[in-house]
Image (cartoon, rainbow, N blue to C red; front, side, top):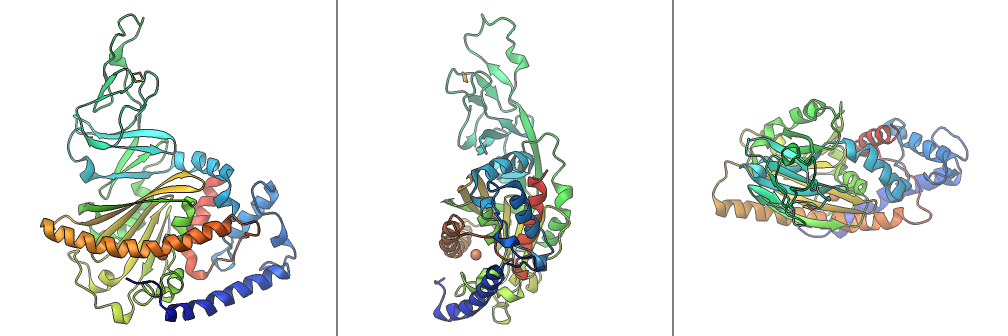
Length: 419
Ligand code: FES
Ligand SMILES: [Fe+2]
């Protein structure tokens, strides 16, 4: 896997220059697509005024052919991130593990979900729960990392909880009047298992996940995601807003630029397609070019050759990103930490009928190398986009028709942020 070739750049420049020139013409004469002089000159940041912010979001929510990107402050303003924390992350389904990571009683993983430490544990009673990891005494987290345990002992004063979150031991509390350890257990958040993923929602009133994403599940049914195992994880830490990754993930338009020498020859931008969506999700189909369609045989039983050679990206809003191909599924597990930082685990999953450890290693290594090379190209461009969005002259831009999935996401985001 190499860097974009010279030939790739020669394809890229005219297309982007023409696009950029059209944008500049539109801005310099101060008219939007409906000819309203001066609207684009108005303040568009949230801090610059409620009216400007509302107009910026209206432009982003126009029909696809007329739509604009979100305004730069939607990515860079910490106040917007606080709104997202309250209106999006605290109410959305977030994938936290594969069921294979929690297969036995006592298996657990921990995570920090936007400031809320969570312990996801397979209880002795067979139920997988997402517990608040905060000790009921003085709020120290009772667990970190991942593993298998029968009991969780708080490192501060040794209060001890079982795998169902029940307080089992609170030393030296005999003199505490009315204190009943048996009546104490860690608060439980909603969990749901979907296609082998364990998801958590901090909102006890949130509607179930599966019915909202049934159309998405049907599209990928032949991949048999539920029967896949996680074989390799690549860890990253990026200094961008989380929506930069979602947008970069959900359009193939940038194959002609960023991936001109890698993805564009096999999965041309112009052939990419985004089906309509009826829920909080988007799908990007990237069919193989004629010369790339005869790739290696698929590892997924029953997948027809056309689907096996197509590359797919899927986003389950807000942060659940999946890439599917003939060898398996890659789960981009993203955790926003602040307006300008995300933690990302790229998890490689392959069908679980493959049990030979040497073969698993070989497949995992090959997918990891390719994925890391493509991601390196994306990191480089996302770094520059992030610098651009933070520059004083950053403005809303026009969306390309090929960016339909970004438009779908933006509309979902605007709807949530306005609630
Ligand atoms: S904070 Fe956990 S035992 Fe004191
Ligand atoms: Fe990319």
